[in-house]
Image 1 (tube, rainbow, N blue to C red):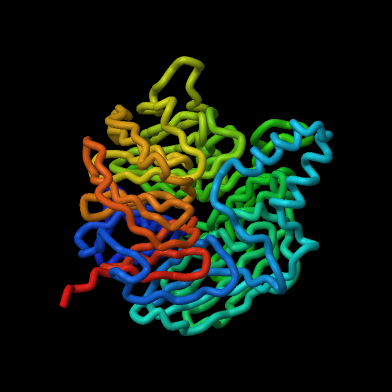
Image 2: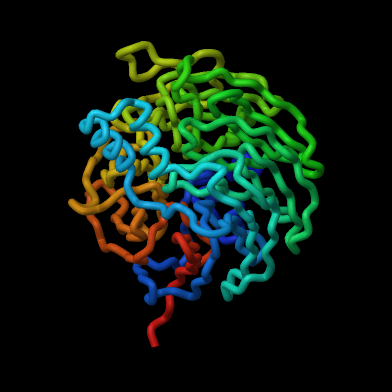
Length: 467
């Protein structure tokens, strides 16, 4: 998802009109736009340029190149388990069953039967869609795989949660434990590389997206069996290198899976590949050699690393710190218990980690959103918390990462409501924009358009001049 960026561009906090949204969370892995007239308000009818039905289900984000929008979906033959908003309902159901006196095996079997969808239950058709950004019309769609999925999914997840990436010449699709595909912009398949299947914790499904740097297409696979980061030649699909990782607690039943997207960090000293995995963040050079590592990460991390204004931000996950790291780190830079900084860790905030959404950096601050709708504003240079406030007493739950433009920070909940929060030191909710359908994908921004995906549709949100 991440393109090789010149150093001067990597340091910029926003992107210009000529930079396209070619990867998950945008060109800098920090979803921010400035200099565009983007809407603050919308609904299913207000400020909607177009909306297009997308069959099947997928929580991959849209990407944009050359006036075209790309996204993936998986269509199920017959019935499929419907997603449900919320982050704790499986745990709550398990707790109820324990109270009823059921054995651990009986509890697990019932939770799996209700909330997990296993490979033997479904036949899937995987599609890559290409839409005209001006009209929403489908220019082409390509079925790139059909069959049973390589692993199961929690019903809140999808079988196509990995966001594609493009270099403007080809679109690269990654489905963890299944394969890599490359298509030209007209939909012709250029190559396909099969990937081995490795189990994910409790069959929760997958989610981390690929990144690009130069001629390399890089994927991260933190799983229960054989964790690795690997590079492939984007022109041929041939593997260039693979580095094994042994992260997370050992033993049967321990969580060793991760759902993060790697980040290519280009700064004045070098270009490095930053990854966050179970209990440990590791940075590599572009040949897969480890540069540094940092412990203090959750067992099953989801938020992805990114850089802003010269610092790298690593989210430790729920119950763990948020870290700011300066360039040039080497070796083990982990913090001893009780310490909050060292030579390379500029600051850490013990209350800064979040479970699902990745923070956004905007106008000198980090905005970190919890899955329960608590938004924190931190000074990007010092880590000082300016506020920590709940969006609403009934805000719902959040998976999508926040984004920012026009002096506002936008927080999309799983029911399709976007809370509009004024950027700045004072917490203020300016409005709520409903779309009345489940949403978990992080939106894309292209010029004066916001591309927002719900469970069944892709919306182009664009300011419409009043008549």
